[in-house]
Length: 407
Image 1: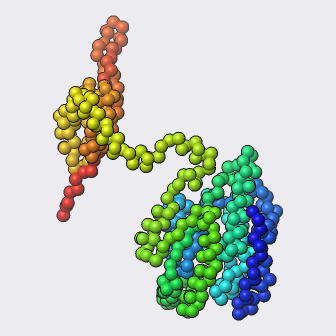
Image 2: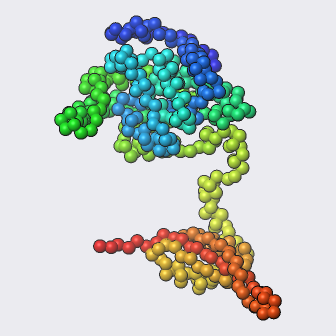
Image 3: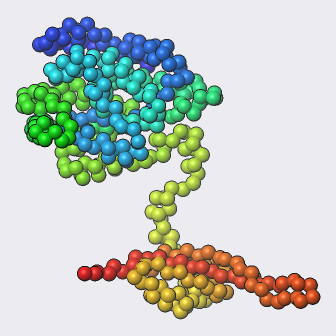
Protein backbone atom coordinates (compact mmCIF):
# COMPACT_ATOMS: atom_id res chain seq x y z
CA UNK A 1 0.00 0.00 0.00
CA UNK A 2 1.29 3.44 -0.88
CA UNK A 3 2.01 5.78 1.95
CA UNK A 4 -0.51 8.53 2.49
CA UNK A 5 0.66 11.95 1.48
CA UNK A 6 1.23 14.20 4.45
CA UNK A 7 -1.94 16.05 5.34
CA UNK A 8 -2.07 19.70 6.21
CA UNK A 9 -1.36 20.56 9.78
CA UNK A 10 -4.46 21.27 11.78
CA UNK A 11 -4.74 24.74 13.18
CA UNK A 12 -3.62 24.81 16.75
CA UNK A 13 -6.45 25.16 19.25
CA UNK A 14 -6.54 28.19 21.47
CA UNK A 15 -4.69 26.48 24.33
CA UNK A 16 -1.19 25.60 25.45
CA UNK A 17 -1.14 22.36 23.47
CA UNK A 18 -1.01 24.04 20.05
CA UNK A 19 2.71 23.38 19.60
CA UNK A 20 2.20 19.68 20.25
CA UNK A 21 -0.34 19.36 17.45
CA UNK A 22 1.60 21.53 14.98
CA UNK A 23 4.76 19.45 15.40
CA UNK A 24 3.06 16.06 15.14
CA UNK A 25 3.94 13.84 12.20
CA UNK A 26 0.93 13.44 9.91
CA UNK A 27 2.26 10.76 7.54
CA UNK A 28 0.45 7.47 8.27
CA UNK A 29 3.20 5.29 6.78
CA UNK A 30 5.87 6.88 8.98
CA UNK A 31 3.70 6.60 12.10
CA UNK A 32 2.80 2.98 11.39
CA UNK A 33 6.35 1.90 10.57
CA UNK A 34 7.62 3.53 13.76
CA UNK A 35 5.02 1.85 15.96
CA UNK A 36 5.35 -1.51 14.19
CA UNK A 37 9.11 -1.46 14.51
CA UNK A 38 8.84 -0.89 18.26
CA UNK A 39 6.32 -3.73 18.66
CA UNK A 40 8.41 -6.13 16.60
CA UNK A 41 11.53 -5.29 18.60
CA UNK A 42 9.69 -5.74 21.89
CA UNK A 43 7.67 -8.91 21.17
CA UNK A 44 9.14 -10.55 18.05
CA UNK A 45 7.17 -11.18 14.82
CA UNK A 46 5.96 -14.62 15.90
CA UNK A 47 4.21 -13.08 18.94
CA UNK A 48 2.34 -10.29 17.17
CA UNK A 49 -1.05 -12.00 17.59
CA UNK A 50 -3.69 -9.38 16.91
CA UNK A 51 -7.41 -10.16 17.38
CA UNK A 52 -9.01 -12.32 14.71
CA UNK A 53 -12.12 -10.10 14.74
CA UNK A 54 -12.12 -6.34 15.26
CA UNK A 55 -15.31 -4.31 15.52
CA UNK A 56 -14.52 -0.62 15.06
CA UNK A 57 -17.33 1.06 16.96
CA UNK A 58 -17.96 4.69 16.12
CA UNK A 59 -20.77 7.08 16.78
CA UNK A 60 -21.76 10.60 17.61
CA UNK A 61 -21.52 11.74 21.24
CA UNK A 62 -24.53 10.27 23.00
CA UNK A 63 -25.26 7.72 20.24
CA UNK A 64 -25.17 4.85 22.74
CA UNK A 65 -21.81 3.18 22.16
CA UNK A 66 -21.39 2.28 25.82
CA UNK A 67 -25.03 1.26 26.18
CA UNK A 68 -24.97 -1.07 23.19
CA UNK A 69 -21.49 -2.51 23.61
CA UNK A 70 -22.61 -5.43 25.88
CA UNK A 71 -25.30 -6.27 23.35
CA UNK A 72 -22.81 -6.21 20.46
CA UNK A 73 -20.49 -8.48 22.45
CA UNK A 74 -23.31 -10.95 22.99
CA UNK A 75 -24.29 -10.87 19.31
CA UNK A 76 -20.74 -11.74 18.25
CA UNK A 77 -19.89 -14.08 21.13
CA UNK A 78 -17.11 -11.89 22.52
CA UNK A 79 -16.20 -12.41 26.17
CA UNK A 80 -13.59 -9.68 26.70
CA UNK A 81 -14.56 -6.12 27.49
CA UNK A 82 -14.27 -3.37 24.88
CA UNK A 83 -11.09 -1.41 24.36
CA UNK A 84 -12.22 2.17 24.96
CA UNK A 85 -9.51 4.28 23.38
CA UNK A 86 -10.29 7.37 25.46
CA UNK A 87 -9.71 5.38 28.67
CA UNK A 88 -6.23 4.40 27.45
CA UNK A 89 -5.19 8.01 27.07
CA UNK A 90 -4.88 9.02 30.70
CA UNK A 91 -1.73 11.11 30.88
CA UNK A 92 -2.25 14.71 32.18
CA UNK A 93 -1.36 16.17 28.79
CA UNK A 94 -3.79 13.90 26.97
CA UNK A 95 -6.52 14.53 29.53
CA UNK A 96 -6.11 18.30 29.01
CA UNK A 97 -6.54 17.88 25.25
CA UNK A 98 -9.69 15.80 25.71
CA UNK A 99 -11.20 18.27 28.18
CA UNK A 100 -10.73 20.99 25.56
CA UNK A 101 -12.65 18.87 23.03
CA UNK A 102 -9.48 18.20 20.98
CA UNK A 103 -8.02 14.91 19.76
CA UNK A 104 -4.89 13.25 21.14
CA UNK A 105 -2.07 12.83 18.61
CA UNK A 106 -2.27 9.93 16.15
CA UNK A 107 1.12 8.47 17.07
CA UNK A 108 0.20 8.16 20.75
CA UNK A 109 -3.18 6.63 19.94
CA UNK A 110 -1.85 4.06 17.46
CA UNK A 111 1.03 3.02 19.71
CA UNK A 112 -0.95 2.48 22.89
CA UNK A 113 -3.87 0.83 21.09
CA UNK A 114 -1.84 -1.66 19.04
CA UNK A 115 0.04 -2.77 22.14
CA UNK A 116 -3.24 -3.19 24.05
CA UNK A 117 -4.66 -5.42 21.30
CA UNK A 118 -1.74 -7.84 21.71
CA UNK A 119 -2.96 -8.88 25.16
CA UNK A 120 -4.04 -12.57 25.12
CA UNK A 121 -7.65 -11.90 26.19
CA UNK A 122 -8.34 -10.18 22.85
CA UNK A 123 -7.07 -13.05 20.71
CA UNK A 124 -10.51 -14.11 19.41
CA UNK A 125 -11.89 -10.63 18.96
CA UNK A 126 -12.50 -7.22 20.47
CA UNK A 127 -14.53 -4.04 20.14
CA UNK A 128 -12.55 -0.85 19.55
CA UNK A 129 -14.55 2.07 20.88
CA UNK A 130 -13.28 5.33 19.41
CA UNK A 131 -10.84 4.15 16.75
CA UNK A 132 -10.08 5.30 14.13
CA UNK A 133 -11.02 8.96 14.53
CA UNK A 134 -8.78 10.59 11.92
CA UNK A 135 -7.75 9.86 8.35
CA UNK A 136 -4.22 9.09 9.55
CA UNK A 137 -5.61 6.49 11.97
CA UNK A 138 -7.70 5.09 9.12
CA UNK A 139 -4.58 4.53 7.05
CA UNK A 140 -2.85 2.93 10.03
CA UNK A 141 -5.81 0.56 10.36
CA UNK A 142 -5.47 -0.44 6.71
CA UNK A 143 -1.74 -0.98 7.16
CA UNK A 144 -2.35 -3.13 10.23
CA UNK A 145 -4.86 -5.29 8.33
CA UNK A 146 -2.43 -5.87 5.47
CA UNK A 147 0.36 -6.59 7.96
CA UNK A 148 -1.86 -9.24 9.60
CA UNK A 149 -2.43 -10.87 6.20
CA UNK A 150 1.31 -10.78 5.55
CA UNK A 151 2.07 -12.46 8.88
CA UNK A 152 -0.61 -15.08 8.21
CA UNK A 153 1.04 -15.95 4.91
CA UNK A 154 4.50 -15.90 6.44
CA UNK A 155 3.64 -18.35 9.26
CA UNK A 156 1.16 -20.46 7.24
CA UNK A 157 3.26 -23.65 7.24
CA UNK A 158 4.96 -23.22 10.58
CA UNK A 159 4.22 -24.20 14.17
CA UNK A 160 2.75 -20.71 14.71
CA UNK A 161 0.14 -20.87 11.92
CA UNK A 162 -2.82 -21.29 14.35
CA UNK A 163 -2.00 -17.91 15.92
CA UNK A 164 -2.39 -16.03 12.63
CA UNK A 165 -5.98 -16.55 11.49
CA UNK A 166 -8.01 -14.87 8.77
CA UNK A 167 -8.71 -11.35 10.15
CA UNK A 168 -12.22 -9.88 10.10
CA UNK A 169 -12.86 -6.15 10.46
CA UNK A 170 -16.32 -4.65 10.98
CA UNK A 171 -17.06 -0.93 10.91
CA UNK A 172 -20.11 -0.16 13.05
CA UNK A 173 -21.42 3.40 12.94
CA UNK A 174 -24.13 4.44 15.42
CA UNK A 175 -25.57 7.62 13.96
CA UNK A 176 -27.78 10.34 15.45
CA UNK A 177 -28.27 13.92 14.31
CA UNK A 178 -26.82 16.99 16.03
CA UNK A 179 -29.99 17.95 17.89
CA UNK A 180 -30.37 14.50 19.41
CA UNK A 181 -26.66 14.30 20.22
CA UNK A 182 -26.60 17.60 22.11
CA UNK A 183 -29.77 16.72 24.02
CA UNK A 184 -28.37 13.34 25.07
CA UNK A 185 -25.02 14.83 26.13
CA UNK A 186 -26.68 17.44 28.34
CA UNK A 187 -29.09 14.90 29.79
CA UNK A 188 -26.18 12.58 30.57
CA UNK A 189 -24.43 15.42 32.37
CA UNK A 190 -27.49 16.07 34.54
CA UNK A 191 -27.85 12.38 35.38
CA UNK A 192 -24.18 12.07 36.36
CA UNK A 193 -24.39 15.13 38.64
CA UNK A 194 -27.49 13.79 40.39
CA UNK A 195 -25.90 10.36 40.77
CA UNK A 196 -22.63 11.70 42.14
CA UNK A 197 -24.43 13.98 44.61
CA UNK A 198 -26.36 10.97 45.89
CA UNK A 199 -23.16 8.90 46.23
CA UNK A 200 -21.43 11.68 48.17
CA UNK A 201 -24.46 12.14 50.40
CA UNK A 202 -25.01 8.46 51.22
CA UNK A 203 -21.58 6.95 50.65
CA UNK A 204 -23.27 4.20 48.62
CA UNK A 205 -22.17 3.44 45.08
CA UNK A 206 -19.32 4.74 42.93
CA UNK A 207 -18.78 8.14 41.40
CA UNK A 208 -19.19 8.37 37.64
CA UNK A 209 -16.91 10.34 35.32
CA UNK A 210 -18.26 13.81 34.71
CA UNK A 211 -17.42 15.47 31.39
CA UNK A 212 -17.31 19.24 31.35
CA UNK A 213 -18.74 19.24 27.80
CA UNK A 214 -21.92 17.57 29.11
CA UNK A 215 -22.89 20.80 30.88
CA UNK A 216 -22.18 23.25 28.07
CA UNK A 217 -24.45 23.26 24.96
CA UNK A 218 -21.78 24.95 22.84
CA UNK A 219 -19.13 22.43 23.92
CA UNK A 220 -21.58 19.60 23.12
CA UNK A 221 -22.09 21.10 19.67
CA UNK A 222 -18.32 21.30 19.16
CA UNK A 223 -17.97 17.63 20.05
CA UNK A 224 -20.58 16.73 17.45
CA UNK A 225 -18.86 18.91 14.86
CA UNK A 226 -15.54 17.17 15.52
CA UNK A 227 -17.29 13.83 15.13
CA UNK A 228 -18.86 14.76 11.78
CA UNK A 229 -15.75 16.41 10.32
CA UNK A 230 -13.22 13.84 11.45
CA UNK A 231 -14.50 10.57 12.90
CA UNK A 232 -17.52 10.16 10.63
CA UNK A 233 -15.58 10.93 7.46
CA UNK A 234 -12.69 8.74 8.60
CA UNK A 235 -14.89 5.69 9.15
CA UNK A 236 -16.82 6.34 5.94
CA UNK A 237 -13.57 6.07 4.00
CA UNK A 238 -13.18 2.46 5.25
CA UNK A 239 -16.48 1.23 3.89
CA UNK A 240 -14.83 0.17 0.63
CA UNK A 241 -12.25 -1.91 2.51
CA UNK A 242 -14.05 -3.55 5.45
CA UNK A 243 -17.58 -4.69 6.32
CA UNK A 244 -19.50 -1.47 7.00
CA UNK A 245 -22.64 -1.31 9.16
CA UNK A 246 -24.60 1.95 9.40
CA UNK A 247 -26.95 1.82 12.41
CA UNK A 248 -29.70 4.40 12.88
CA UNK A 249 -29.44 5.06 16.62
CA UNK A 250 -32.17 7.74 16.77
CA UNK A 251 -34.88 5.27 17.75
CA UNK A 252 -35.65 3.38 20.93
CA UNK A 253 -33.17 0.96 22.46
CA UNK A 254 -35.07 -2.17 21.24
CA UNK A 255 -35.18 -0.73 17.71
CA UNK A 256 -31.45 0.02 17.73
CA UNK A 257 -30.63 -3.45 19.03
CA UNK A 258 -32.79 -5.06 16.37
CA UNK A 259 -30.81 -3.15 13.74
CA UNK A 260 -27.55 -4.34 15.31
CA UNK A 261 -28.62 -8.01 15.32
CA UNK A 262 -29.61 -7.79 11.67
CA UNK A 263 -26.28 -6.23 10.71
CA UNK A 264 -24.08 -8.64 12.68
CA UNK A 265 -25.65 -11.92 11.59
CA UNK A 266 -23.13 -14.67 10.88
CA UNK A 267 -21.93 -14.83 7.28
CA UNK A 268 -19.70 -17.81 6.63
CA UNK A 269 -18.34 -16.53 3.31
CA UNK A 270 -16.99 -13.45 5.08
CA UNK A 271 -15.79 -14.98 8.33
CA UNK A 272 -14.37 -18.40 7.48
CA UNK A 273 -10.95 -18.94 6.05
CA UNK A 274 -11.37 -19.27 2.24
CA UNK A 275 -10.08 -22.87 2.34
CA UNK A 276 -12.55 -23.80 5.09
CA UNK A 277 -15.44 -22.16 3.24
CA UNK A 278 -14.61 -24.06 0.04
CA UNK A 279 -14.65 -27.32 2.02
CA UNK A 280 -18.12 -26.88 3.55
CA UNK A 281 -19.93 -25.02 0.77
CA UNK A 282 -20.77 -28.29 -1.07
CA UNK A 283 -23.43 -28.88 1.62
CA UNK A 284 -26.69 -26.97 1.06
CA UNK A 285 -27.70 -24.19 3.44
CA UNK A 286 -30.69 -24.90 5.65
CA UNK A 287 -32.29 -21.69 4.37
CA UNK A 288 -32.04 -22.97 0.80
CA UNK A 289 -33.72 -26.23 1.72
CA UNK A 290 -36.46 -24.55 3.73
CA UNK A 291 -37.28 -22.04 0.99
CA UNK A 292 -38.32 -24.88 -1.34
CA UNK A 293 -39.66 -27.29 1.27
CA UNK A 294 -43.35 -26.44 0.80
CA UNK A 295 -43.28 -26.87 -2.98
CA UNK A 296 -41.41 -30.18 -2.68
CA UNK A 297 -43.88 -31.47 -0.08
CA UNK A 298 -46.82 -30.69 -2.35
CA UNK A 299 -45.16 -32.52 -5.25
CA UNK A 300 -44.46 -35.63 -3.14
CA UNK A 301 -48.00 -35.84 -1.75
CA UNK A 302 -49.51 -35.59 -5.23
CA UNK A 303 -47.16 -38.34 -6.45
CA UNK A 304 -48.25 -40.56 -3.53
CA UNK A 305 -51.91 -40.00 -4.42
CA UNK A 306 -51.67 -40.66 -8.15
CA UNK A 307 -48.75 -43.10 -8.45
CA UNK A 308 -48.86 -45.04 -5.14
CA UNK A 309 -52.54 -44.69 -4.28
CA UNK A 310 -53.08 -48.02 -2.53
CA UNK A 311 -50.06 -47.73 -0.23
CA UNK A 312 -50.74 -44.04 0.39
CA UNK A 313 -54.27 -44.69 1.65
CA UNK A 314 -53.10 -47.65 3.72
CA UNK A 315 -50.71 -45.30 5.54
CA UNK A 316 -53.51 -42.75 6.03
CA UNK A 317 -55.74 -45.48 7.61
CA UNK A 318 -52.86 -46.58 9.84
CA UNK A 319 -52.39 -42.99 11.06
CA UNK A 320 -56.11 -42.50 11.58
CA UNK A 321 -56.71 -45.76 13.47
CA UNK A 322 -53.46 -46.42 15.35
CA UNK A 323 -51.75 -43.06 15.88
CA UNK A 324 -54.31 -40.26 16.05
CA UNK A 325 -56.17 -41.62 19.12
CA UNK A 326 -52.91 -41.44 21.08
CA UNK A 327 -52.10 -37.99 19.66
CA UNK A 328 -55.53 -36.71 20.70
CA UNK A 329 -54.97 -38.07 24.20
CA UNK A 330 -51.78 -35.98 24.46
CA UNK A 331 -53.23 -32.80 22.94
CA UNK A 332 -52.35 -30.75 26.02
CA UNK A 333 -48.66 -31.70 26.16
CA UNK A 334 -48.07 -31.43 22.41
CA UNK A 335 -45.95 -34.59 22.34
CA UNK A 336 -47.03 -38.18 21.70
CA UNK A 337 -44.99 -41.40 21.53
CA UNK A 338 -46.36 -44.41 19.69
CA UNK A 339 -44.82 -47.90 19.47
CA UNK A 340 -45.97 -50.01 16.54
CA UNK A 341 -45.22 -53.39 14.98
CA UNK A 342 -47.42 -52.76 11.97
CA UNK A 343 -45.68 -54.36 8.95
CA UNK A 344 -46.69 -51.45 6.76
CA UNK A 345 -43.65 -49.63 8.14
CA UNK A 346 -41.34 -52.23 6.59
CA UNK A 347 -41.64 -50.13 3.43
CA UNK A 348 -39.27 -47.13 3.31
CA UNK A 349 -41.79 -45.40 1.05
CA UNK A 350 -44.53 -45.86 3.63
CA UNK A 351 -42.31 -44.31 6.31
CA UNK A 352 -41.65 -41.32 4.03
CA UNK A 353 -45.39 -41.00 3.40
CA UNK A 354 -46.12 -41.00 7.14
CA UNK A 355 -43.63 -38.20 7.84
CA UNK A 356 -44.92 -36.11 4.90
CA UNK A 357 -48.56 -36.57 5.87
CA UNK A 358 -47.89 -35.35 9.41
CA UNK A 359 -45.84 -32.42 8.06
CA UNK A 360 -48.70 -31.37 5.80
CA UNK A 361 -51.07 -31.45 8.78
CA UNK A 362 -48.76 -29.25 10.90
CA UNK A 363 -47.05 -31.93 13.01
CA UNK A 364 -43.40 -32.95 13.27
CA UNK A 365 -42.92 -36.72 13.09
CA UNK A 366 -39.82 -38.85 13.57
CA UNK A 367 -39.49 -42.67 13.35
CA UNK A 368 -36.83 -44.92 14.87
CA UNK A 369 -36.58 -48.69 14.42
CA UNK A 370 -35.68 -50.76 17.48
CA UNK A 371 -34.83 -54.48 17.24
CA UNK A 372 -35.49 -56.62 20.30
CA UNK A 373 -34.58 -60.31 20.72
CA UNK A 374 -37.52 -62.27 22.22
CA UNK A 375 -36.83 -65.80 23.65
CA UNK A 376 -39.01 -68.28 21.73
CA UNK A 377 -37.74 -71.79 22.55
CA UNK A 378 -35.43 -73.31 25.14
CA UNK A 379 -33.56 -76.57 24.41
CA UNK A 380 -33.26 -78.42 27.75
CA UNK A 381 -30.66 -80.79 26.37
CA UNK A 382 -28.21 -78.24 25.09
CA UNK A 383 -29.29 -75.18 27.07
CA UNK A 384 -29.57 -73.23 23.82
CA UNK A 385 -32.12 -70.42 23.67
CA UNK A 386 -33.75 -69.71 20.33
CA UNK A 387 -34.92 -66.13 19.88
CA UNK A 388 -36.92 -64.28 17.34
CA UNK A 389 -36.24 -60.71 16.33
CA UNK A 390 -39.02 -58.30 17.24
CA UNK A 391 -39.09 -55.10 15.20
CA UNK A 392 -40.69 -52.10 16.92
CA UNK A 393 -41.08 -48.70 15.29
CA UNK A 394 -41.08 -45.85 17.78
CA UNK A 395 -42.93 -42.88 16.35
CA UNK A 396 -42.70 -39.47 18.01
CA UNK A 397 -45.25 -36.79 17.11
CA UNK A 398 -44.70 -33.21 18.23
CA UNK A 399 -47.04 -30.26 17.81
CA UNK A 400 -48.14 -27.11 19.57
CA UNK A 401 -50.00 -28.17 22.70
CA UNK A 402 -52.93 -26.57 24.45
CA UNK A 403 -52.37 -23.85 27.06
CA UNK A 404 -54.43 -24.14 30.22
CA UNK A 405 -55.50 -21.06 32.12
CA UNK A 406 -55.44 -21.34 35.88
CA UNK A 407 -56.49 -19.06 38.67
